[in-house]
Figure 1 (cartoon, helix red, strand yellow):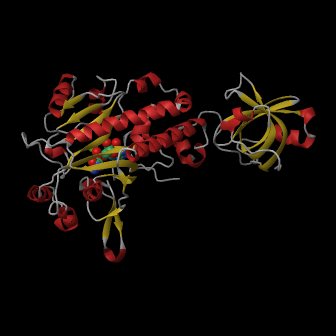
Figure 2 (cartoon, protein in one colour):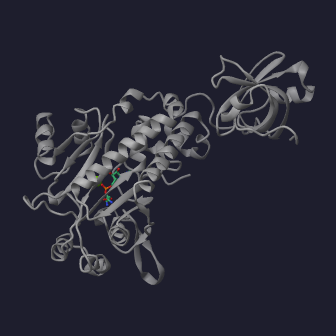
Figure 3 (spheres, helix red, strand yellow):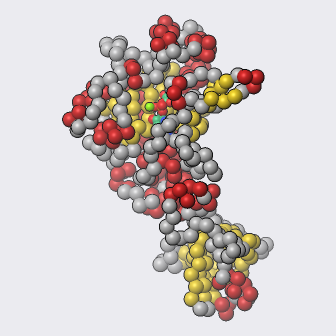
Amino acid sequence: MSESVPRISIRDAAAHAGATVEIAGWLYNLRRSGKICFPLLRDGTGIIQCVAVKNQLDEALFEALKDLTQESSLIVRGRIRAEHRAPGGYELDVEGAEILQRVPESDPYPITPKEHGVDFLMDHRHLWLRSRRQHAILGVRHEVIRAIRDYFDSNGFTLVDTPIFTPAACEGTTTLFEVDYFEGEKVYLTQSGQLYNEANAMAFGKVYCFGPTFRAEKSKTRRHLTEFWMVEPEMAYANLEDVKRVAEELIVFVTGRVLERRRTELTELERDISKLEAIRAPFPRISYDEAVERLKQKGSEITWGGDFGGADETLLSEDYDRPVMVDRYPAQVKAFYFQPDAQRPEVVLGVDVLAPEGYGEIVGGGQRIHDLDLLLRRLEEHKLPREAFEWYLDLRKYGSVPHAGFGMGVERFVAWMCGLEHIRETIAYPRMIYRTRP
Ligand code: 4AD
Ligand code: MG
């Protein structure tokens, strides 16, 4: 708009107190009283209240600002002034403005400051993202992802991306999305990068992959998406105890980062921060056997050999103020690749980490079978086609070693950090059984 005036972000307003600046944004809300109006401007980094005074502005401009409609786009020029009563601590005294697009009254912005139902908001997800709450949640998500990468990048892990079109099932055949590939070939959307991670770990020692994964989950719960992001580390020459140690370190590190850098967002979300401050090592560790006993005492219908439902996970986690690690599940409830416990072959060296406050399983992983014959038997028991796994079997023929890893779901982690009721708000465009739009 003006050559000499610097264009700033609202989040940097403090550094420009007393100076005349330009801010490019959208009208979040507007209050007016006679000869003065207060446009609330948002620019994606924050919200600032502007003060436009009639007798200090061009008359046409004042009239235009005074009647501006929600989410109209505009560039405002003015002086930043400290104002201790303002939410961000600063206001802008308007000296000029340029309106880029005025939202017409005939077709107003659909999301008004009043209450809307979740379905309506989900249908308008592409616009809902502009709200303070969604902004705060996605800010926390960004921090979680950045912290996860920082953790692995600074602990000797190499990022190796794994494919999304895959020929084989990793996590069982019941949740596969099938895709028509060329000339009648069927492939599946990946459920997990793990199998490729195992190959990559034999090449690099410690690796991780981080990308979207897919599950044709028919379950309509507050913890399930059909498309979610998972970070998966895998380590050669490693066992179940290494998985627990790394998962614990990762969770403590990421939680610490969120607390350190996203206080404003957590406050906006009215998150009870003391609950997150309690997340410190060591995490309690219990066995599946012990978990079943506890659940029975708490009135669950579970019997030994069954998998935990969401309600069981909540019951288990309510005894702790930090995540609990449950290990050694019965082989029959886990995927084909889990290494059995040498002392008790009916249980496997797998661990689930259950978040507190009822957020359920955030991490699943363990030690993998490294013996070729045992792996072949398991593929048969699980009725998985050997051809699709030949390359995976090679890893047990050429320098096989004990190895282990895990997967952590980003959306469940973010839901927990933010204290959300439902996972659907943790990703910009959630995919669920009955939701594929917008
Ligand atoms: O326990 P899961 O299924 O483990 C695996 O996929 C392993 N192959 C990972 C590995 O060892 N490399 O999934 C891991 C995590 C869960 O703990 C949960 O956080 C998340 O992924 N997750 C989901 N998140 C949202 N919606 C779903 N439908 C999810 N399914 C799993
Ligand atoms: Mg699991």
